[in-house]
Length: 206
Image (cartoon, rainbow, N blue to C red; front, top):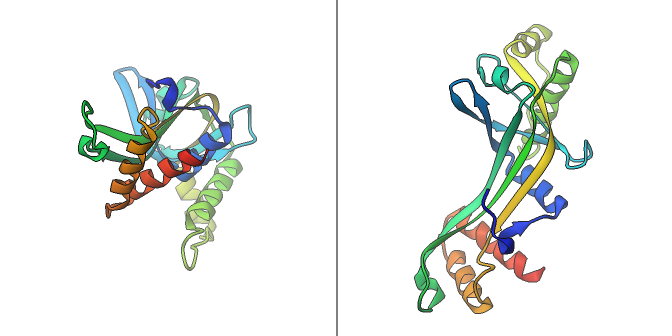
């Protein structure tokens, strides 16, 4: 990922926070015919390895796992994004741009071969994503059903060997122009714009 110095994010805790918050990732790997990609929720084990470890699963019918096994893969975590109009700067010699947050995580794709580990992963994912529900659904289905589901998926882990973070939030513009952008984004009704405005304000306080 192309990352100019003023947009680079190196803080590991900040990168981990983003991975957990924007956890629906694009998993990219090489295949015999070129490239392969899947869109998957991935969980993070922060304390596993120097930069953490990603864990997840995909359908056994998805052949990406066969090509990816033992190979380096890339997980892309996309945060909020918003179009920035040059009119908002109220300045000359400016151009349109896009503000956004993104994290790229690289690592070797390792298969989970233990059924108990895979079942524990499913239970953890359910607990994680159901936590915000008024009445969380629990992973308490008949054993036969669970076993049948386990046979239809493949679990994997990706020990992170390299992390790249890009927080493109107008850091290259003067403070007054950034404030104008935050104000305009705050007027928008969409969640992406408001979240980008919040992140820009957060950067101002650092």
